[in-house]
Image 1 (tube, rainbow, N blue to C red):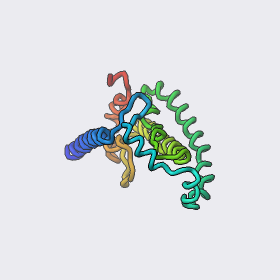
Image 2: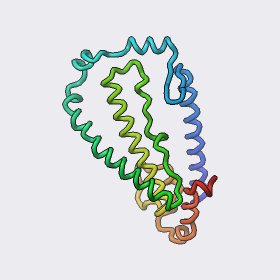
Image 3: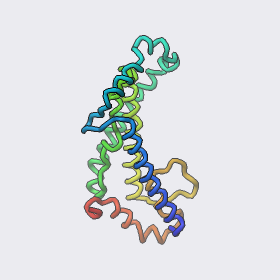
Image 4: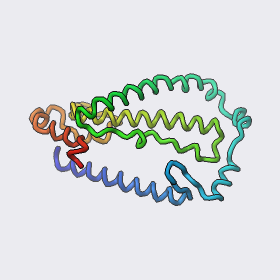
Length: 197
């Protein structure tokens, strides 16, 4: 990997850190506090949220009909999502210790906190919980697959890849056989929690 690419990756990492800090500062201005698993808003904000809540019957008649019609298809996806979750979690639990790869924490990816928003009715909260599970699960699975790819084949593709995971930028160049043989163990050691700690 040349110096220019290393420099760009370093800048990307620094910008991601800066973005996380800015988002945290914004959270503090929204007047809520995280207390363990609970999110608590200031009393005035809670009252304002309560006034903005749409009742179930009003929501039912004002909701777009296509959303109601496609509901069974959307919620039918829970079965493949649960199967994916089961198999990927089983894979990680059994194989990562053998490979000495640090396990991915579910709680960093699958987050349920939208039920604390008082302006959502119970149907909207249910939708939000389902979406949080689905999108969080895909991110969780993506990180498990990314660590697996780093362990077995940390090589970039010849063609441009859209939506690649953050580890991909540090992978070896396509066709660089000498680097692959020399650096594969370094990529594996970087995944080992005990060696890094």
